Amino acid sequence: MTRMAVMTKSYAPDFELCASLNRSVLDCSPDTVHHHIVVPRTDLQLFGRLAGPRVEVRCEADLLPRSFVRLPLVNIMVNLAQPFPPVRGWIQQQVIKLAAIAASQDDVVLVADSDVEFVRPFTPEMFVRNGNVRFFCKPDQIDTRLARHMTWHKVARELLGLPQAEPPYPDYISSPLAWDPKIVRQMLARVAATTKRPWPTAIAGQLDFSECVLYGIFVDEVVGASANSFVSDDSLCKVYWEQTPLTEDSAAAFIGSVRPTDIAVVIQSKSRTAPAVRDAVSGALSGRERMQGWRAGRA
Image 1 (cartoon, rainbow, N blue to C red):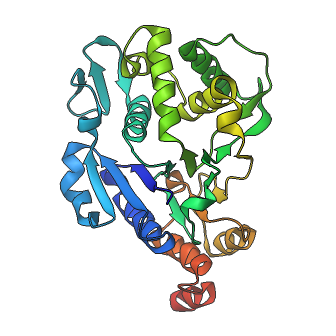
Image 2 (tube, helix red, strand yellow):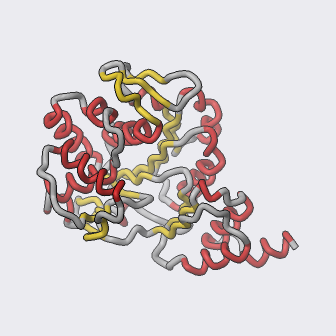
């Protein structure tokens, strides 16, 4: 039997989103799939409401070296092993994700942010084929028009001890995203060997970094055929990227654009879309409700 977990890094402002994600994981996956939610210590009581036979709520501090100390009143840590630069929230989140995946004994971990919601059934077998974990890769997507993505590729190559390459580069970023914990452990060992520092210190010392790019380059250029044979450029997810909230009409259009093969949707938390609209989208797609009924109730 293929062992699979869903892993989410969250915090108190995203609790309602994470609760919806959690319900969708339990509704759409087999009983063998567990959901691991990693949160700050101060949020353990709040997220503890979600804990159950298939849901484990973990403290992020338990996944970090003791040298990582959180500063009061700001979302910044200091790594006492390398105090400068401070570890900003975006970098912290990625270090914690990597540590959580590396600690997993599952065959595949599906990383899903709080604003993901599953709307159709999914199984471990969808993400593992002949022992290989599904690998997301869209070739020739990144060039000088995406300066930050270019930086992520440069940093990843430095951490892995690989020579720099000429663009265009592949895009390895998606959500949700399947990861092989065994490969993550190999990757982090490579980072430690290349930088001659513990991997959390090496990564936390970066000013900008993408864990997805690091994993993608490692799979493609270090591990190779044994890891990237089950490759796809399909994210299996419809994403709403806009910064403005979805309305009744735009929500209906969004629902209409979701493909039968999409198992999840993402409505970016930064869009400030109302919870009722989010519920209507997920309900219409999962068959729990109908868009027409929601509209009638608001008339």
